[in-house]
Image 1 (cartoon, rainbow over the protein chains, first blue to last red):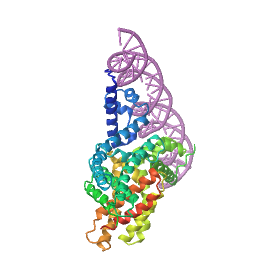
Image 2 (cartoon, protein in one colour; image 1 turned 30 degrees about the vertical axis):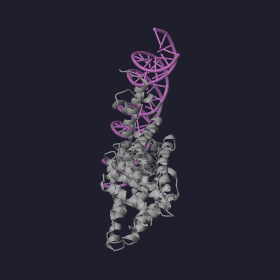
Image 3 (cartoon, rainbow over the protein chains, first blue to last red; image 1 turned 45 degrees about the horizontal axis):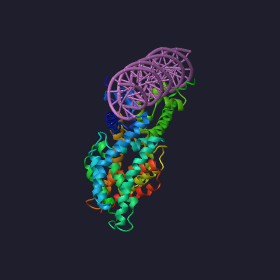
Image 4 (tube, rainbow over the protein chains, first blue to last red; image 1 turned 30 degrees about the horizontal axis):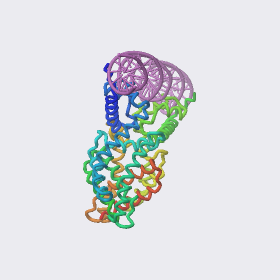
Length: 200
Length: 200
DNA sequence: GAGAATAGCGTACGCACGTTCGCTATTGAT
DNA sequence: ATCAATAGCGAACGTGCGTACGCTATTCTC
């Protein structure tokens, strides 16, 4: 019908597809993404959607990557004005709690959803999920380590234990929000994270 | 081919179907359950499998319920010899950590997988997931409350905060085991739970 | 201005899905 | 001995899926 096809338009179309795909995936999982459904909702042809990715698996991975980039923009980057260490860590954690409490995507955090969905299924999608989580954990751990090295945390502080508890709080907050719409969980997550930083 | 159909045999067949379905669902999600696949693996016809449940949605719910009953048998019931309160709670928590570290199902805890999978999709399956989680949380909370009332925990102890942190540790342990096969997470989960019971 | 690239469309394909229907053979109660 | 129930089978259905192919129209490069 309307074959516009400049390079700029193509990138824009690709972005529209990924945005909608991320919304769908956040509610119904990466497997809920369907080329036919995307085509219908974006008012284009199945083959038009397909061509941008070549394979459904690629579409799923690109969707996850896009969601991760958005997450990073909102959660991590604003904290980079703080020096590495405890100050930056606290801002990152606060931002991530805010993100989980009021996510960009309608079905909540896609990284978290994809984690459960693909942790038992070998393949490229699972690898992508693992990489995304590895980066997020690496970011948190780097500031924990910096805080210890900078003397902001007590000597003998167990970095991996704190990391575990911070991640745990995020997972539990996401579950409480998505399954039970429990707003009170937000405060509990904040407190749990603060407690993770005060090992006795 | 071999139409045996006593009432006892029927129940047995139903159990075989649900057992295999639970295994599949633990690895690929409740949506990974497929009547055709079950029929093939169990060497029976699609219609034979179908007839036991009438609807795929019912099959999914029954699978979840079966997995929950098995979980309950292994985690909660052995602890009922302890008196309600802190002692029973510690046994339940220890059993649940053991369960997550070495689950009955190949893909890990089905309740946890189903939580992420269906938290954003209204319907009977989601309701079943919510109910299962509500029962599990209720069990934990009952012993926390009993512990407070029995004076085993300090006055002013925040039961909901502790419950949040215990559940969080379980979710994080499951994620660490399934995505990263991180055995060290077992000890961290145990420690996180113990810390949840020692509010400062 | 000519020509290679390519965004997007339309059509078609094979496949797996859940569900339906009618049948057969066995059971279990009368 | 009879007869209603029913476990399970086999075949068929409509649907939606991912993917492949060829085409058209526009853009970008030279």
